[in-house]
Image (cartoon, rainbow, N blue to C red; front, side, top):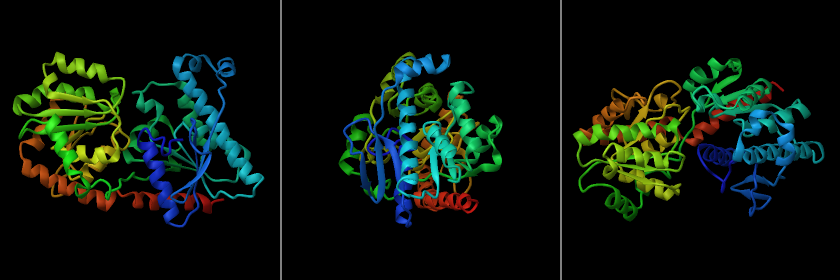
Length: 408
């Protein structure tokens, strides 16, 4: 559903990185993405056939046809319309290509509930096409056990119809999918990756890095960085709550929060209430890749205290930039698998994301020894290069696709 230039998070990054690498490995790839206007309906981008589909506004009819829970979405109901209409348009396009044009797709892959409907339609219409359901997160997990009952049911239905399920971490498999009763015999774990050439200290724009330090850090003071959506699940409010403890030990420390989300005003009010408003800066925007590289290069430690994080590509980005990381490591946390917290390969610190004091302890463990922090950063980049490249992710994903293809 997300594909450049329409990228809003990790799913858009994932789809574009894997599609391009599949092409490099000699495969033909067709991507079906939303077209909200102003984009070509078809293009070949880096060898990937991209179909950007337009769709209709059926909200008047949908409000009559759907259940009360979906009608209660309010302004979000238009988003539901866009998702559903795009899914129908995508499924019809795939079916027409196969039945009328003689195109043979060896595998159809769909991602989360956002494209589950398309996968289910294609499976119903052309049963012999292998369907792989990629689950990056679940509705119940994102909403701490709550969420939309309709979306939850849709996720489970697509999982039952799929020939294979790919998820992003063992934590996701064991702490989210298994307790919900997903068909575990179908589940395969494939870690995400990062572009370590793009995210590299050697690529950091020196003037931009200097500008970030001058604007957001005290002279000779440590800069703590958070990049991500400003929502409850990312634990960013707990990070702000940790700052009084951090400042008590490191009076010149500053926290830089970068992202957009519903918690923006709350975070500033919280910082003011805790008397650390002068220690906290908030950049309310999505960063370009060049800006991201500069922000990572400018910080002394990157902190991602997520309460629910099936994987966590931002941690990989920071590690590729040779920065030590402090990560939430409770419950469904793929960050536990990414970050080694002790021993010769240590690249960061695990903390309880529900406890601001523990988050502060993790930050202190890094900042108290800058030399140790630099050593963790070097270890982090080495771990990324050995385990978390997009090339490796592509190869592992292709193994799953070949497995389901052989069965059909």
